[in-house]
Image 1 (spheres, one colour):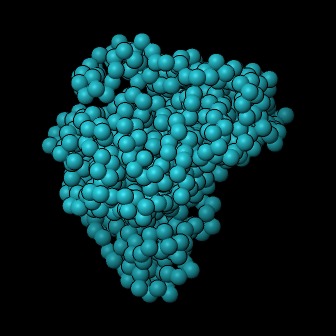
Image 2: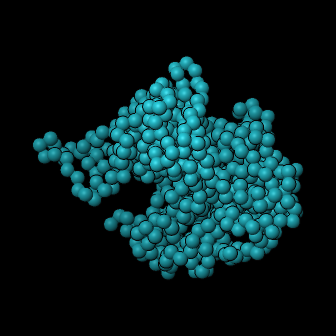
Length: 319
Length: 284
């Protein structure tokens, strides 16, 4: 006997409802087929969205035991094996407003997607007459990101969105910004990069949930890193985020080869780091920080060789 | 059982989380494990440097791995972000970038072959739980542990590959071997926010506070984590985070190596428990 507990919402009230199914009625089924089975045999009032049933439309993502899955692409047998249990809680995607049962409101996320201009604005060398062709190599560079089916699994599990969605966009939005910015036919990468920065590009907390839950194996976290590199290379280096990232790089390449934690706050926040004075006092009191480190740590053995290796890599990148 | 490792401390263990290194070095000999620090290891990039320069970050980690290969040993780290960075670099190198990156390593007369695996303290302990249990001289009976995994011990699953990221059990296995009890808490698999504490401070403080509150609500005596960065975030920033949410909950936050040390009879002083910001000595 399997138990499916579903978090429901009728427009006014939230409640949970349990459905008992014979083991044979879940064996071999996907989560989506299980939901359809419940709707057909036990409860026609249960609401959820689905369309293609073959993992290409992205309509059926839900949470199982607190983790987003594509319902049509997730087998109940695999879930039973993963959790060692045949009781599951199915809930609507997190970080979306729930409309009804497992149905969520996509409009705010779509509004964010529009902000980063997901459609391409082509370089002026292209025309209606000549077309806008792309060679295979350039297409291959962005092919992974084109796999995004807008299922929302990444957004559901994003820890930054859960903490505060007012200064952050859904991870897939950054993936589409990366894809548009890195399209060889695109006129201006910053057309997509600037709204990404405005939408919280530097606020990603690196939880890796997006990379872990994407049913297509896309890492929005990597796309966020790529966008950060692109906007910095294009001169958008102002702010705490770029300064923080650069401080790690500076210590690795230009300084000792290891991170200098005493200098990190200063390099990241500049003089405004005085706001962290209380924290610094705590760390010094606990003996966790050595103020002498501010003058620099010992350079690692072989650092000169490391720098030569990196210089060689940079030279090769330019070729 | 592998008993000798090329030890990759990571920057944080040499500075703000020195107690983690102290504890690890006190615990290892009691477990019959020899940790040989990799000479000349560099920062792994800390999940930050790749934003600025992905190729330099990959080169640095290829060099780190090549240094371990020279020692003929698998790499062990107790920092989850170092674990992720090193494992991702290895996957990239083994997945086709090895030859190209080796042309750069050659400038320092080095070469990456792919012979050293990368593992973590948590994984080694979980794989050898029976051995660990046999070394316990002071079972932590009655200690209720909120076992906080931290993101980079688990995610992305394809890069770490040790266990399910949605239903992991390695940490619970280790805590049980020490005689302590793990308590379920809702934020067990969440992110502490460490990597964005500067650019997204308000969100991060909320995340940190929620984890501490969640652990306290579960009846835990302490939070324990295998990641020194999570430990720093949950410990150093705990008071500030709780002030923002007006929460009264306070929770000692131990490194995994400190918890193991307690069960193996290592004195609290040698485990550096007095370096923890929220008083952890009462756990001893």
